[in-house]
Image 1 (cartoon, helix red, strand yellow):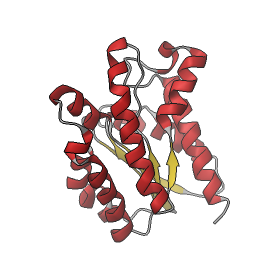
Image 2: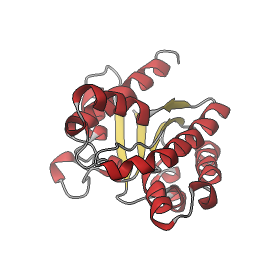
Image 3: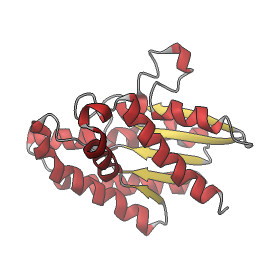
Length: 206
């Protein structure tokens, strides 16, 4: 049985500790992915280690407990929007926070201490409400910071900001996001579909 572990913030967490019926998987995309993979001929053990409010430094602090000791076969990472929030609220830019170096260290530590395949997903924001429009440049910077070490280490990368905003333009923001940051169930379904497409693409080639 292969073990798939999800790291991230509240998007990944999705009330995993407060909804017992989800068996620790939360109500969001992780739960959807687990349900879909149950239909597979292969057996997967899904672990959700998302934490509400987490930043990249917080993931690094908890990495041994949440990830390394779990000995995963796959690690999925979705983090960054809280780092962007700090940037906009304190005027300390992501560059000044060391976001790129911290994210690169996160990826390298997972590679060094586990044998896991890694899927990196970019953070995202929706300009609805309008105040979040000013967050987009930092989110784009975060996306580039995630993509660069993913490309350098031949990891899978999913540009969620672009993909989810394309869906919002097509279906309407209220269909995809509850508040400009978090996702509706439809938003989680789109995220899960993007993740599964990525996962299936490299599992077919291994």
